[in-house]
Image (cartoon, one colour):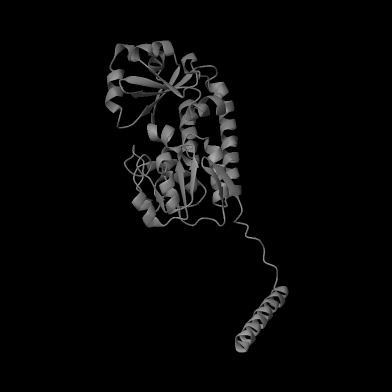
Length: 314
């Protein structure tokens, strides 16, 4: 019994000596700077995400987030693919690199995500039903899929420790659209501009509440037709017969492989041929995915360029 107590006392003395030695040693070391990459908190649809370190392996479940990361000079380890391009968006070229494809944004592959062992998953409200499963794989941030691209970009800046770069991209965008807006006031004036997409034997008219239409009407100051004024919905379906009533002076028409035949059938009618925008050659055919699908800073910048090409003479 005495031997056991003696052993306990010896161990206690050793522990005390170790602690004192560690404290003494620590006092001689230079104080370490705090980790500048940690501690940022991002609010999202499911709560808050606090960054303990910059995530090295990020899986994104919407193609627009691939755009955001590349714009900030970063590469995700995995992304869903674009349905309209049957792969990655053409406008990104080789920028995505050797990124793994994880299915579509509507049906992402949980097995594929798990295999990548990501540090972070970035999803949208489209993935509400699988959020708990995603969380078992890695911390998951969820954004509203229709959230303004600039606020999403700022969140990405916080997540990736690229705040300055995100702010610079937004500043460059503001400068670009403000300069173009001045030119549009001269070249287009009060002429009305509509954004349409033939679909389901009708024509989808995007209202002023739509996120791309907001670029036309809010950022660039173009004038919408009265029928495009927002009534709470981001779009409304109108018939071919209603197009003369729309009365748009300019039409941006969204096209892809899903509506080529429908568009051609509309164009072969006397109603379409009689539209003032058609007779004035003010129909501008644009890629659906680029204009309303991808919605990242790189895509938006290209949309601005295309608007300028149509309205501003060289």
